[in-house]
Image (cartoon, rainbow, N blue to C red; front, side, top):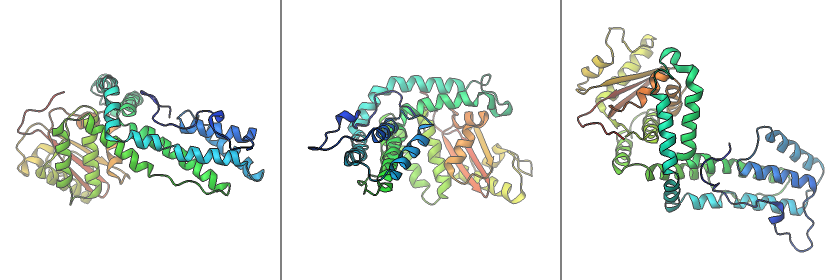
Length: 346
């Protein structure tokens, strides 16, 4: 996907002429130069969808033609070696802070644009889960993510490109240079960026949640923290773990799984408010998201809720401060609640 916002974080050889040939070395052949150009576009986010087939066909042609030139192999190795070096530098705290400063205003505008669509019940109605407007919502959220989650965009894409080039070297019978863990680097960069743009109290809540969820179902914990990070992306405070809401959500998920139904109202007629009150939860307001389906990962459940207008708005409720999540078989429940403090507004 093409880069957006600031200039690309990657530094590699932009033109074939920039590669220093060894003394007496023959330049890459025309067909080799064509493949190098395709890899260059892939590394810099300029590749078109159809280029994947072109890269595969060009590589197969080289394999069938015999040994490639040493200049081609040297150039490809150099691209693999340098592909993530600049990204590693960019993932350092001071570099991430600079990048956030550069993007701060653009992030605020993109966030406001996304929220304006999501919270507009006319443009993104509850009817039919807002499916007609969902592509517009997805586009707005993706524009924000591209700015505020730079690791997932730049580093992850560079890692994919570098690994494809490394596989090409191996297919041509040449050992590829070692690569760093690009996925870990992308996660690190996104975490640092989130820290740079979030108040200290929000980061403290995330840390407290992590401890509180240590013994929870790992996918429940994943869904919980992903929900919090999404709210933070949207400029809202994360929600804190509440044991009463956790119990209410888990009991409702188990009841729905046992009796094979999916509804905000239990078979005994109790709704979300009554269920959380039964666990001693005293605050208002109360909200609930439920889901059933084949998804097994906590972050997949969050994505499903983000693709339903009413659920999406509940995720971003400004008056909520506390959260509980339950999961049993294919049933998921989120119970939201207000708290004792005045809600933060941004």
